[in-house]
Image (cartoon, rainbow, N blue to C red; front, side, top):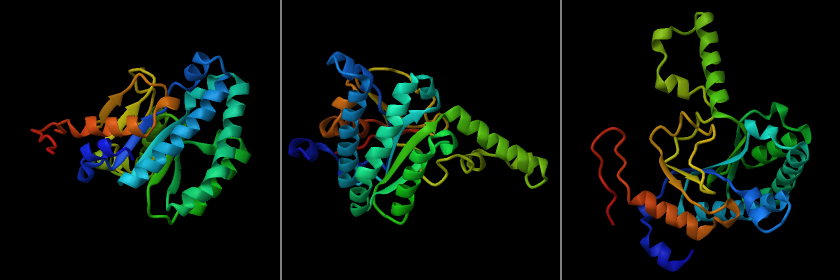
Length: 249
């Protein structure tokens, strides 16, 4: 880690959970007259570096918006290339992640993911399930509205069967029906490429999350940029609807 930045970061106030909307791979490639898949490949280098740094500084959960339910609308050739790249990357990286005690998990619906890719991903999940380091959590074929609807349907079935009184439905009960039931809500959400929208990502979970947006494309987002985002996070007051207290150095 770059020493001047490290000296500024409060290591006892590192976000426990960082979520990232990794946007701008295609535009990064276009700006360099490269095919879009080249942007996705370069974006993997950012994933690798951000994962490493998060593990080093004590982030417990890193959730990356890898492929949304809306991304199926992209040209089939690009979708196919992305699925191949995802499988290739996991096969190349999972041993190193395992050695570093990283736990690899997935949120989203894998039923419509190509079976070969889904199988490779689940093998990585199984290999690392007992690791105790950083939880690298990929949001894959993920859509937050779809996630919430699925949770509501599950609760409705319990009500219908008589196992649940509707009066007992509360925030905690619905949260327990989400993909993210085993991890805390994000403390910090980062979005790259200058876009100012949430794109159907963790809509329930980010109710009180601090949001950091940058003009940089995802392939340009590396260690320095992550630390800048964390420094910005540490300068804010988190009130959760109450009177807050600013983190002091």
